Length: 116
Image (cartoon, rainbow, N blue to C red; front, top):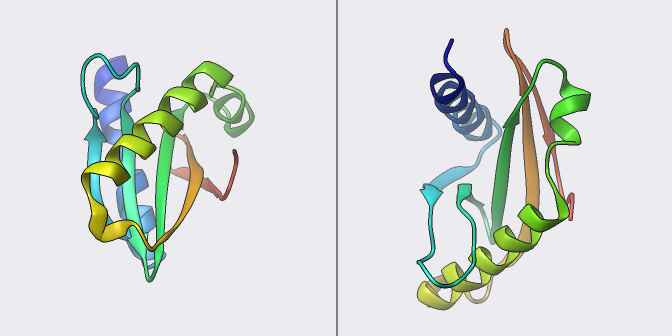
């Protein structure tokens, strides 16, 4: 499986997993804009009055996936989340959280809540 295909499959599986946990997917693969130095947000999802910004990582082991999110990447996602909320004021009264969805094929998924 090519890396890009594996990544897309992992993101699809992560969205499906979050839906099964009661989240509504608001957006996927969100780039908040050039020049903002914000990275892509893999999944933005809502459950009740909570918005999560989730990073999806696929590796050979769940442990390697957990360590694959760098401090720089976390900061870019945080900035992207701020930009997303500024552009979507309907979510201003919501709580926010940064999660990770870790994937190991075949079909091992771990959802880590509030990871940064």
